[in-house]
Image 1 (cartoon, rainbow, N blue to C red):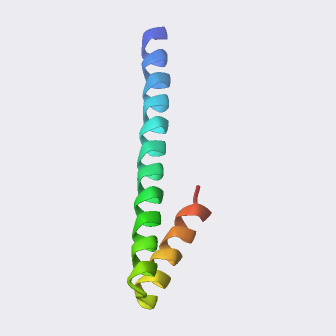
Image 2 (cartoon, rainbow, N blue to C red):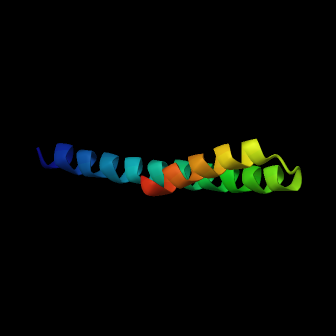
Length: 60
């Protein structure tokens, strides 16, 4: 029983780490895409990406 509980705890920590990696990678990618949209002066893409970025940050 103790081993099972420890395994469950490790699984929770691993999931937290994976979630953080995915979140960080997505935020970084969006930042790069936003900068690219600004460089290209693509207003529509910029607004879509910044909205997506803001939604991501709300759920952080």
